[in-house]
Image 1 (cartoon, rainbow, N blue to C red):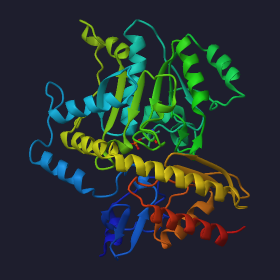
Image 2 (tube, rainbow, N blue to C red; image 1 turned 60 degrees about the vertical axis):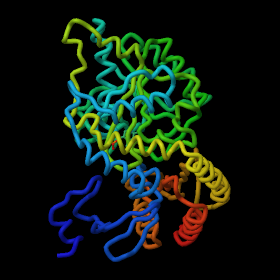
Image 3 (cartoon, rainbow, N blue to C red; image 1 turned 45 degrees about the horizontal axis):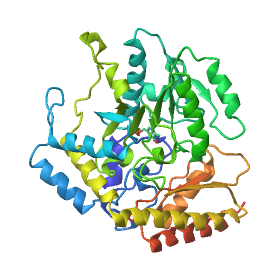
Image 4 (tube, rainbow, N blue to C red; image 1 turned 135 degrees about the vertical axis):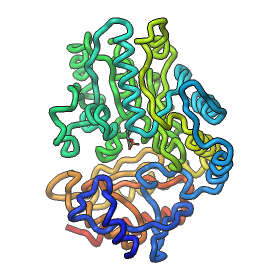
Length: 423
Ligand SMILES: *Cc1c(COP(=O)(O)O)cnc(C)c1O
């Protein structure tokens, strides 16, 4: 049996209807922006392998650092023990975050980073003898696939089978200059009970790269503070340079109480999640009473290999060449967005930093299940480009090592495909 057949016999893939899906493409090697399949065909990874790969695949520096760590200490229980990579990573990360972020809690992925953040907020109130269980989130939000993370995500076809089992959340519109006063009065009407507000800052990724303005979000954050609502800023997608600045936080005038990270954290090398918080949050758990402990932990909490990958990735991220290339991607995206804006098949072009998205004009509106998405996906694959449209929303989220020529190759193909798929 070949790899495709063996895969089909045993593997169940994520977000995949296994009955109708095409066979998964076996990838045997990755290098820089390219992935190579078992027949030697190469693909440009224009979506950074689900938004995680920052510096390209199989980066030699990250590989070297992880390999050294692997021969030194691969794993140790993080209750009662610690290690240099976790200490150094926490120090380095906190240095880059808004200055009110003081403590780092490790977990395994974006969803668990969100679970930890929610538990911190709910128990923050509980430990002070208050009952605050309501949570505020944006409509169409996406915060992950575990039950807590699903609950604070917009209700959709993805969450439908679990509908009754998800806890109640108050969903509000994303802010704009016109609706802020309305949002404030909605929030005010619940104020006694709301423990926290969780949001994807500036870009709602999985919803289809929907964007809002920093000044509107800042104003909403500021208002939540006046209502004693804790702020959870989910930077799982936006963190580590995606938006053109190191963090979406760098665009905002208000500081969150809690932040979540994963995806680009290790440069896409190893799974890891981080939840950071302010001293005030941390202090609410300090007590002689052991029932006030944050009872949460994962077997692989602060895995030394993942911490080392993150340290190496952050070193690469802060290099002048990387920051310059992030700017180059951003500038080129901006120029290309002007071309897309002129195209009759395209609407709602949006851009921030290394993220460029637009809607492919269709009759049946925007939906994840829009068939055009599948046709476009196949077309780009045949041209050696991995893009994964969200329904009729097309987007680019390339690794930062992509060159100007490689970007031009992708842009050229996009224009070709737009002409080919004229309605
Ligand atoms: C992807 C994502 C998550 C979930 O992360 P996983 O590692 O896939 O569990 C959470 N929040 C946001 C904003 C994301 O984009």
